[in-house]
Image 1 (cartoon, rainbow, N blue to C red):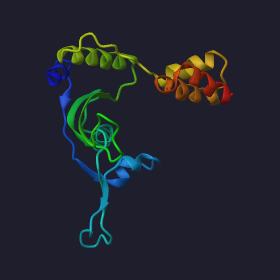
Image 2: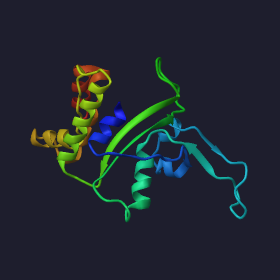
Image 3: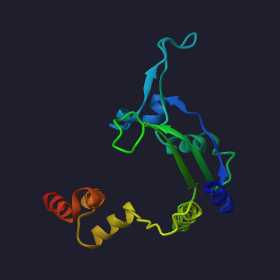
Image 4: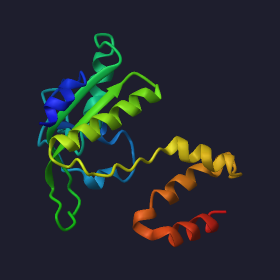
Length: 186
């Protein structure tokens, strides 16, 4: 049902490998490595020396970025794709969560227009309805929009990102917690 919605909007399916080089998945970002199932192959190919450091994908975003980077001269933009596949997270799962689960992504690459964001929201609403969740509420968190609101409210430009990080924790720490965090952050 989900794939039918994606196709109706003009999204094409892609599939990507499950295993990547460790460096490709982390991109040098600290902290993400604790989410990865990773290992070193016992030995590399002839002439490679030590075995390769590899890991299972933890989401479908990095594989999309890799596809776009590798094939940008062949892809027609905007590039609309969907991907439904298993992903793995090595962190200790909370109750009701799993280390292996299926993720479903629909993305538009190569366009900066807010119309693409609006289309993704429409796809989401239609996809939820297709699987019987038509009374769902979609909450939108837009970093740039919140940062611009903060600046318009008098927050210095260099501190605007802290407002987003605080507001993003609203469900976890509540309105009072967000207020305390923002006051403590200046």
